[in-house]
Amino acid sequence: MSKRVLTTESGAPVADNQNSASAGVGGPLLIQDQQLLEKLARFNRERIPERVVHARGSGAYGHFEVTDDVTDYTFADFLGTVGKRTEVFVRFSTVADSLGGADAVRDPRGFAVKFYTEEGNYDLVGNNTPVFFIKDPIKFPDFIHSQKRDPFTGKQEPDNVWDFWAHSPEATHQVTWLMGDRGIPASYRHMDGFGSHTYQWTNAKGEAFFVKYHFKTDQGIRCLTGEQAAQIAGKDPNSHQTDLLQAIERGVHPSWTLYVQLMPAAEAANYRFNPFDLTKVWPHADYPLKRVGKLVLNRNPDNVFAEVEQAAFSPNNFVPGIGPSPDKMLQGRLFAYADAHRYRLGVNHTLLPVNSPKAVPGGAQNYGRDGFMALNPQGRHAKNYEPNSYDGPAETGRPLSAPLPVSGYTGNHEAPQHTKDDDFIQAGALYRLMSEDAKSRLVANIAGGLSQVSRNDVIEKNLAHFHAADPEYGKRVEEAVRALRED
Ligand code: HEM
Image (cartoon, rainbow, N blue to C red; front, side):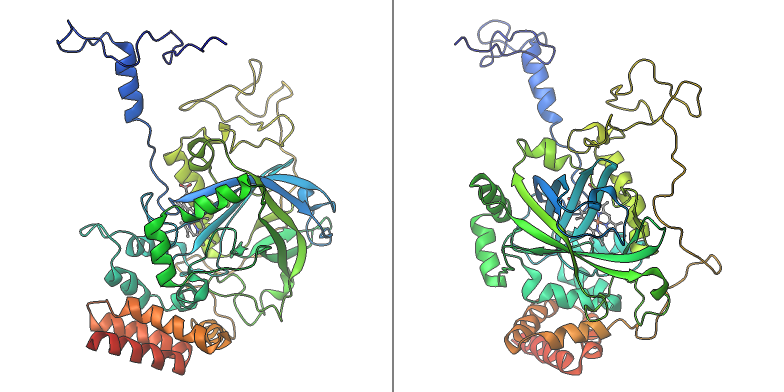
């Protein structure tokens, strides 16, 4: 078989890909060497801005299959029939470190699912934790700055990490989660995923339900201790990527069972916790898990950059039957992601195969046009304005989800407090649920970090949070920190 010809970007054959063109054998190089110039210039442009958070990640394709009838709660078409399958792309990630970091670290994990439904892409952009550190999006940039590399030292600083938490008592629940046994998953396959926020489902009768998503791993939970993680991170910084890639290549397809918690919308106002507070869970005794379906990953991307680095998930990508709740954090995220994609990937990022609504008959149909890297999927006769007299795409008039009531005055309000709301109650409950061994590891992990903080006032403020969660928890952390600082 004859070899295929190497070409330039414009398709012309390349004569020599090993020796640059020069003026004479030993002379300087010629600016007319198109292959050299194009190759170097192209290489300089290989990187795009990394994600501002969740920079390191791994992705895979698969499907979601409905196993249980949920049509009493949502009219979402892809959830409408038992046995229905929808293609998915999932990206897992770590949060805080930049692209050069390691996978086996103490950090939440991202768990972002793109469902390619026939009514548009539905993005459920969650984490492996059911709660989060803060409850108002206005704090997010400060939070992330405190956890990522310090602008002067260029590395994560315990002073910054714990100073932010000292000023954020609402983080105590998630800090307890993160410092506990589940804080370092052994792999992406061995962890659960959560939508974390409260979302809204609407059924065909127009009734609204609030919903929380739980993906339970069918592989079982496996975690690493700090020591195990440090060893693995040193040996293979890409340990999660290696595990996921190799499992799928071997034909071992990881899966998760999706459950939801459902709250009739009318119960939200009087629930003992603010149901839209992302630092709290809904106890299962109040709202039990209901099974919905199975998520299976069975195909690796062919190109990590094209399909994983350029994947763009947006919590505002809903489909009919599913919508947002008044969760303030979620509301902030409804803006942040598509904005990040327009910066990171450009305004036409939805034309990339991994992001395009591939299951929608005819693809996306609208009047958005042009911008960098535009194609013309609408064809030559499509009008670029609406309304028009040319049978262009038109609105349905059908709301995507039920309207929710609002009241009160505009203003910079704190989240409403329900009867049992405080920042510590669920952190204390989580601590008391742990076995004695797990408590000891939790206390040691917290003390290991907190004892490195240079200022006593920052340490004291953090200790006060653990005391408030549970007096025994506070006492044990305090003793462990003191012991390490006296060393
Ligand atoms: C107001 C709070 C938040 C803001 C402003 C925010 C913002 C962002 C931004 C800008 C990105 C990078 C997007 C990109 O460049 O592709 C990102 C990624 C991500 N965030 Fe958030 N985030 C917030 C809270 C959360 C929460 C609470 C969760 C989980 C429940 C979460 C899960 C993720 C995940 C999984 C990714 C990576 C998505 C991917 O794999 O591409 N974020 N976030």
